[in-house]
Length: 85
Image (cartoon, rainbow, N blue to C red; front, side, top):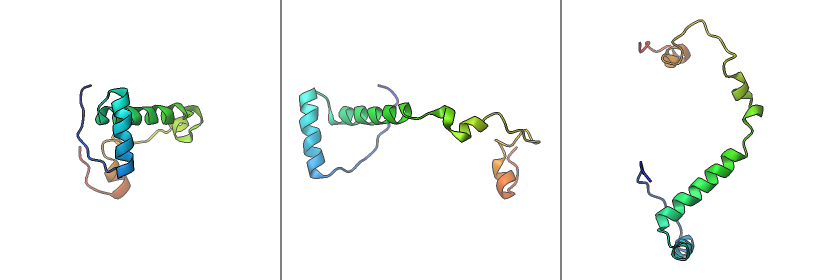
C-alpha cells in the first residue's frame, strides 16, 4: 500500500478493545483493520449513489460562460478579487 498518510483518531476504550480482538482474529494490524473498514464504508456509499439522477451531474457541460478563464479566476468572478492570470 503506497501513499499512506498519517492521521490520528480517537476511539473509546470499548472500541479499542474490540479492534484489538478483531485484528488479532484476522491477523491484521489495527491500522490495516481501520483502513479496510474505511474502504468498505466508502465503497458502500459510492456504490449506492445514482449519478444519473444527480441534478449537478446533469448540469455538467450544459453551462456556457462568456469567459474562458472562470475555473482559474473564480474568486474574481464571485468576489471581485484581482485575477490570478
